[in-house]
Length: 389
Ligand SMILES: Cc1cc2nc3c(=O)[nH]c(=O)nc-3n(C[C@H](O)[C@H](O)[C@H](O)COP(=O)(O)OP(=O)(O)OC[C@H]3O[C@@H](n4cnc5c(N)ncnc54)[C@H](O)[C@@H]3O)c2cc1C
Image 1 (tube, protein in one colour):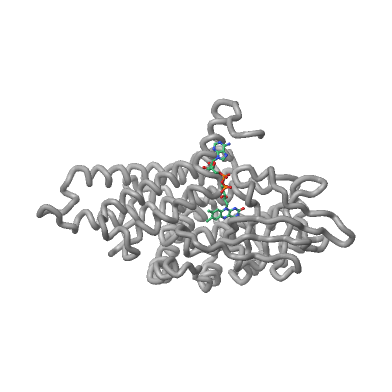
Image 2 (cartoon, rainbow, N blue to C red):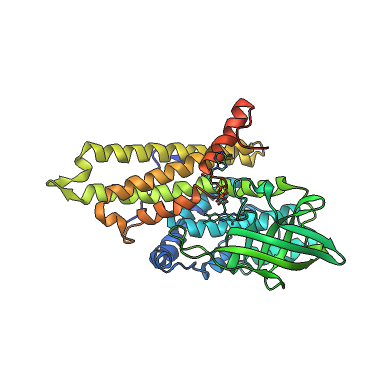
């Protein structure tokens, strides 16, 4: 079934030639390399690890960062990369988001020159893989409550605690880990193989199956003095990483929704029920029009946010609004597309069911739908309904 990306308001015209080229090259790569194999990976619960180097060659890893082997693209180009990857699968986009925004970005923004030289070129090439450990078993929406500690000892630090639900954890060469020190929360780089550090994978997932999700366990794990990210001064640094990743998610969700819409539209034109294509029924058209309207609004929101980000004038609550709106939009589109496919929609011959399952994770991670509502609500009212912030 041929994929056609909806662009009802000619958002294409708002993009530079370079941005269009980036989008088209990633779209082509996803069509050729991701689509033929992704349902199999989802079924087997495996991440297509060989794609890491291919993404590196295409300049997709840390694409929005400058220097150290990174492509130095603009924010809209980075967003379009996320959009096209997530059209393939949220797991593939999650890999790219975690690598670029949650692992490379903190090294780039808060790392020492030695840390940057050591890790960023290899990570940009997809030869070294990173993960980001913030969430703990008892602290997800409220990461400031974390109990993982980093205790200063002669010659370094000793980490104790556990991180939970960590994307790329089991395949990561380097983990960016947030821990409580006597001076507050700081970021640390923990290398794979460090004694006292293990990363067991979490099984039994019915969402984001083509992505590795792991626990990170630190049991008297000693790291050297220079494992600390020197520019980190508190929880706010980890939240800056999340802002960068959430921005990409707001774009990525559009790709997932476009994939579902394209599939639903094709089915509406070709599936004959009561002697006519189901697209001739008003309720089916209503679903398609709702999807198209919401995708169009989401595209304009993401594009505007991208331009604000490029000007350096975006606010983190604007990112919250876009992540919340666009992921919810995509999940609704996936559910409606799945419904329109009838029984066929529950098989992995069609993409909508896989996107629907994946988006349940996407609406939860990087701040749940409700947490982003409370963040925007606080901005609008000046009143904190979130917790103890
Ligand atoms: C597939 C996957 C990959 C992930 N990858 C990573 C990763 O790479 N790194 C990382 O650090 N984390 C990662 N996470 C963790 C993710 O960010 C957390 O799951 C998320 O922040 C929610 O935390 P929680 O699961 O502990 O839910 P909880 O915080 O326990 O929330 C449970 C429910 O309570 C609601 N709730 C909580 N507080 C409030 C409040 N004040 N008011 C109203 N409602 C509230 C929430 O909205 C939610 O509905 C991942 C999660 C998943 C599923």
